[in-house]
Image 1 (cartoon, helix red, strand yellow):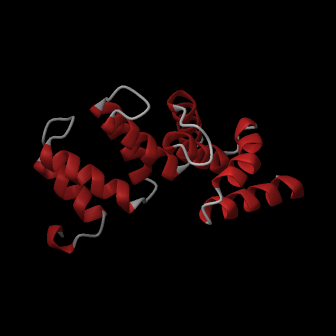
Image 2 (image 1 turned 90 degrees about the vertical axis):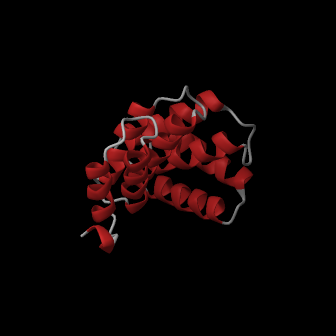
Length: 145
């Protein structure tokens, strides 16, 4: 990543985190279009929720998917939620589990906990108490140790 790209990414993230979404989309969108995973992820959030830009489900899904395929753990988690909730895409419990698992395997505790709850409740997949306990343990819940 060259210096200018790095500066634009850092500035875009800073604008995003300070809720200056119009500025964030201006800085991050060109980087997202060039395939930068963090920019794709943050643009997806803004597009999904209409932050600084008109809500665009198709583009939000495209950006989140692209970042997830690049191995971005938070995007994998976000894509899992899109599939689980049917937000920006047709709901699909099995696809949700695939993406939550990808993020969980990178150590994302939120995805590990979400998987535990999915398997505990049988939300979109067949309930599996043993898998639920396994994911709760991985997420650090001591009572399952």
